[in-house]
Each structure stands twice: as C-alpha cells, then as structure tokens.
Image (cartoon, rainbow, N blue to C red; front, top):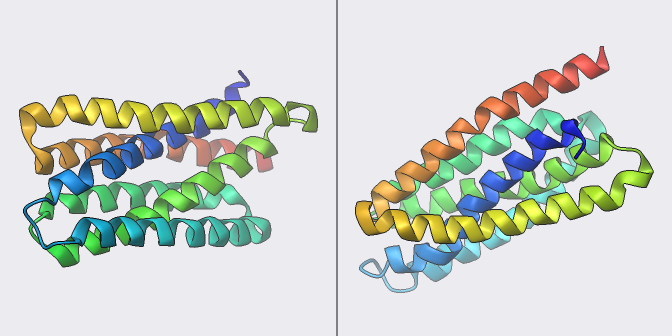
Length: 184
C-alpha cells in the first residue's frame, strides 16, 4: 500500500471502530434511560453525519480536505467521551451531534485525502482500502467493545474508546504536517 495512505486509513478505521461501538451498544447502554432515547440519539447521529460529509466536501473543495482531519477526529472523540454520562439525555444527544459531525467529516476527508495522494490509476485501490478500513473498524468496534464492557460496564467502555480515539490525534497531526510539507 502507498505509505501516504496509512494514516488516513488508520484514522478512518478508528472512527468506524467507534461507530461500530455506538451503533451496536448504545441501545443496550440506554435500556434504563428514557424510552426511545437510543432511537432519537442514533437518528440524530445518522442525520448529522451526511450533513457533515457534505460540509466537509464543500470546505475541502475550497480550502483543502486535510485541514479538517484534526477537528473531525476531535469531534468523534469528544462525542464518544460524552457518553460516559449516559444518565443525562441532553448529554447523550449532544454527544451524538458531535460524534455524527466528526464521523461524517472523517469519512469525507479521509477518502478525499487518499484520492489526492494517488494517480487516477490508483483510485480503485483507494476505494478498496477505504472500504476495508470502514468495514473492519465497524466489526472490530462491535466485537472489541463487547469484550471490554463485560469487565468495565458501558460508561468505562465509552471512556476507553474515547481515549483510543484521542490517540488517533497523533497520526492526524502528523498527517497534517505531511500535507504542509508536500505543499511547500
């Protein structure tokens, strides 16, 4: 694989890992909360994400996609961290807005960044790598979190997931520096 694709692939995998966690376990984590909170929370996330994908595309066309990578990863991490407060319906919804915005932006930014780094003949490879990272992240998130919460419970599991996402800020930062060096 082209080395310049590694960091965006890792970042997408981490974001989809968190998405796999939320989609699979948020309804279970909220069973003791207000009825329909999980449905509303997942609807909010699923509604915000495509708007963020569109907004990231609009921004990327005018200013370059890579500038959104750090804020997008940070939004995903903060949205996940907010779920430590499962007892607060407002915090759950705000967290899902943050998560959805970051997740939608990460999807757009990683794909656009990867396409920018290969010649047109490599677009098929980028598509395969991006989709593998997406699907693997979703599956590993669901399985990994399931194993984790058996020992920690939901709030601590969401906290651990958020810390993992914060760790992805490091490759996002390095990737930003890579893009700046390429432009110079």
